[in-house]
Image 1 (cartoon, rainbow, N blue to C red):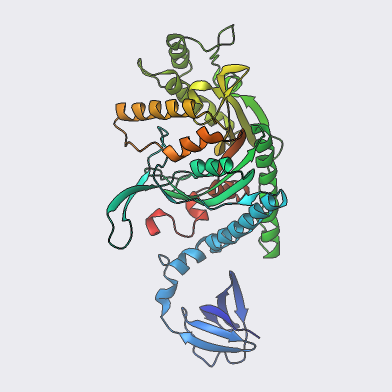
Image 2 (image 1 turned 90 degrees about the horizontal axis):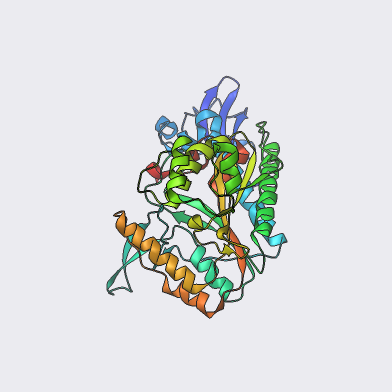
Amino acid sequence: MPSTIARVLASTPDGLLLWAEGRVLRSSLADAADAAWQPGDLVAREGDTLHLIARPGPDALAPDGDLGRLLENGAERDAALRDRAALLRATRAFFDRRDFLEVETPAIATSPGLELHLDAVGVRLREGMAGRAVERWLVTSPEYHCKRLLHAGLPRIYSLAKAFRSGERGGWHNPEFTMLEWYRSGESSDAIIRDALRLFRAAAAAVARARKARGDARAVFRPGRALRLDFGAALRRFAGVEIFGQDGLPLPIATLRARAERAGATVRPDDDEATVLLAIFAERVEPALAAHDVVVIERWPASLASLARRLPEAPHLAERFEIYVRGVELANGFGELVDADEQRQRFEADLAARRARGLPLYPIDERFLQALRRGCPPAAGVALGVDRMLMAVGGYAEIDQVLAFPFERA
């Protein structure tokens, strides 16, 4: 029988309390009372015998140590790591059953992305043992590389890996986090939304099974039917703001600013359409979404298109969607823009906006644009925060609860 490695938590008249494999075990072994076991001892359990491996002392159980952090709050962090493992297994099984190919893309890239609200983490490294020093960035998303693989002929792919964003730290943010992205060639965002809603249910079921197996009685959040709204309808319903005129087209910017101010959103006289719309959405709409289990916001204004294609029947709108669970954004997806010329124009506009605001400037990914120019098939895809999905289904309130080593302890 293989030995079990355990840590002595305490010695009681009825035996020892041991920490092993995520559980507190009570040992009433015959030799326990004679061995003068001490809290913090590292022992091997073989059958009915305990053997001392190391005696580091009670400091091994210090609350600021790695074991102490696993044990605090009823071993909540240990349970979260086991919930995470179950969720990751279920995620891979979900995509494997649907004939997706898991791909690995670079964590260090020539261009990390140009979105205004994202700042990248720079790295400096040498090309070879004695090569010249070059500047690169940790990816904020694997999106560019995934789309290059779509161009290369991989029709259904997913990536489950780390992404990195500077300046993001809080209850829902860690600078290093786990990102799930998947793409379907030849399909629309509807197919991706259906995937996401089914994945949420599969993740909840997997965490529930894992908890039941280890005797954890905590409930799991199982998402119900999603509320689906166009972006304009969401602003109308939750903020009382109509952003389109009677002709269905966007309002003049002065009118939009005035309506945003009346709704209580924070806007400035020189704010452009995208800034005003985001202010209304962040300040008036997002707080209201917490009252709903799952909300899908679709058909965003073209000024907020990001990397989404415009809708052919309504060019002032883009095939973009975001999914919120109890008011927290979990996923951001697109019917993908595959026109190289329009994509370059958007990149150059983003660079100009970053320059005007004094934000860091990053290179345009020319290889990505080249892949689009050489022919990337119509596709849809999404980026989903895995840590947030675990928080949602597992009932965790802070991202630190679901990370083995949050930023300050990494």
